[in-house]
Amino acid sequence: MNPAPSTAVPTGIDPEYLSDPDADRIRALIDHVCGHGAADILRAALPPGVPDAVVDMVSRHCRFDHAALLVFPERLGDLLDRLPHWGLRTTEVVPSTVVRDRIAERLGLRAESVEVHIVRCALPGDGVAACEGRNLELFAVAPVPGADFARLRAEERARNGETHFAFRVVEPTPITLLDLHDLLVSRDEVRRDGGGFNPHEDTFVLYFRSIGEPASDRWPRRLEILATGSYPEVLRRHAAPRPAAGRAGSPPREDSSREDPTREMLHLVTGAWVTQAIGVAARLGLADHLGDGSRSVADLAEAAGAEPDRLGRLLRLLAGHGVLRAEADGHYRLTERGALLRTERDGSLAALADLYSGLFFTSYLGLEHTVRTGEDAFTRVHGRESFEYFAEHPDDARLFREAMAFGTVVFDAVPAALDLPPGATVVDVGGGDGELLLRVLRDHPSARGVLFEQGHVVEAARELLAVSAAADRCDLVVGDFFTGALPDGADLYLLARILHDWADPECLVVLRALARAMPADARLAIVERPIVEAGGSVLPLRFDIQMMTNARGRERTVAEYRALLAEGGFELLDLRPLPLDMAVLTARPRPAQG
Ligand SMILES: C[S@@+](CC[C@H](N)C(=O)[O-])C[C@H]1O[C@@H](n2cnc3c(N)ncnc32)[C@H](O)[C@@H]1O
Image 1: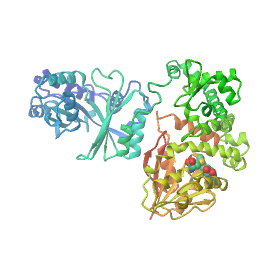
Image 2 (image 1 turned 90 degrees about the vertical axis):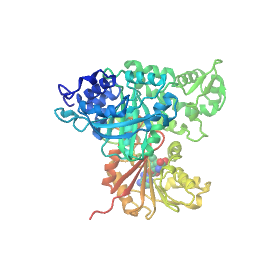
Image 3 (image 1 turned 180 degrees about the vertical axis):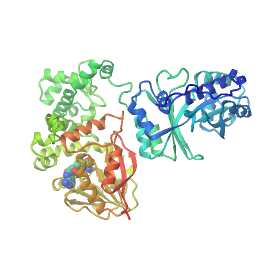
Image 4 (image 1 turned 45 degrees about the horizontal axis):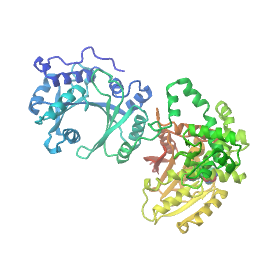
């Protein structure tokens, strides 16, 4: 961090203005901005105790731009006259719309009756090196007659509620902005606080307000992320409701574990027991037996062919984790969470719960071996690599396909995230049983599809296709994406949940084969669950271990995907978020050099 200069305030301040309450605030803000390094200013705009990794990531992509303050001069000219006394050089005065609208709303007035100007000014460079290149934005609110205005002015002077510290993204891309956004909102203490795009200035802003005592005695923890350009996807994500996890309404027993490290650790260490309990519930078909109703333990035990005492204890644990609800009469019913174990529903997790507590669970006995040696856990435990194993075990292969069908919750959002020209041909490489391709064809009625898969999987896809209205627009091609030629000449190639199955060398074989098969103007759409660096959701990290244990693959950060794609002959263009931490990453073949 930059050392604080011994005196931050430029000399030559006219003492007359120090008695003005706004003058005092402006001076204190100059002190704060000139007296601290950018990382310290950032830290003070984020929650107390924010990890270094978060500060580092924001610092890597952004530079400090300005600090903002709401002030109340009698006349705008008065303020402009005074600024040189603080060594401030006015660079621009423009009308404000966003802040004006917010103030008008608070005063219960029409926006047009409130006048707010943004006075942009550069901080002095001379003698205060830390101020070089830093700016203030003073939002000058013209007097509005009425008691409420007096109250607003008094409150704002006391609270500085509109103050923020703005960091500008140096090389903005949708991917960088999404990464930054997700990193910040992944912290429970950070709240989204509005944002928007100003077309006149081609400027995009996101505001974040953090809970916690102010870092200094007066400035709120309010951060603005600023970028040139328009990023509607990021804005949509910013406006979306916070994910339910960790919010009020989660089962209290789980949440209470957060307070005590021993309890919390015990919770983690015993997590596999819960995986097993849910897996057994899935294999006993408890959710289907319960349906929409409630049943007694004895009744359920009979229906599921289970021993009542042991089943009762299993149900009690599942209720503790919010999978079931115990009713006053001792009956159990499904919660919304538990209903995901019903087999006959979209997005069923029943097969996944069975697979993750069964075949894929036993592989974890080889995790230590994998971590120690780098050798594949699944192969060590089951004798062969997972896709070879499935080719020889049809029942397990069916369970795997059914488990993958859970991804359809995510697939529903994929077609809208693809840019497909009319009449386009789409090749789904390793497309499984065709669930994703069928959704794309359904949403794009003029598109044609090609499903490229291994022989035994294509047979399953044939069954699904047979009952689909898009059957006549879809061809099935049996092939091996490592050794066979891929269908060429199409407009869009899908690689959904393929790259994460493999290590980089295998991925490069597939990517280079794709680069050879794809026309120069075709697009590659990769559906994966990218790891958000530093403090993002833990789900991609869990799946990363899963890929290491039950495949030879890994989850990757966006930067790793970008690098992998570049090595495979592609350029990453865009990232569009999907539910459950997944995303569509769009790439194009890199034009041949020279
Ligand atoms: C994790 S699944 C993903 C399936 C589908 N894309 C989805 O997202 O539901 C991986 C798929 O890759 C296929 N696959 C594995 N090795 C392959 C190969 N060498 N050639 C073609 N497909 C392969 C498997 O059969 C499997 O369907």
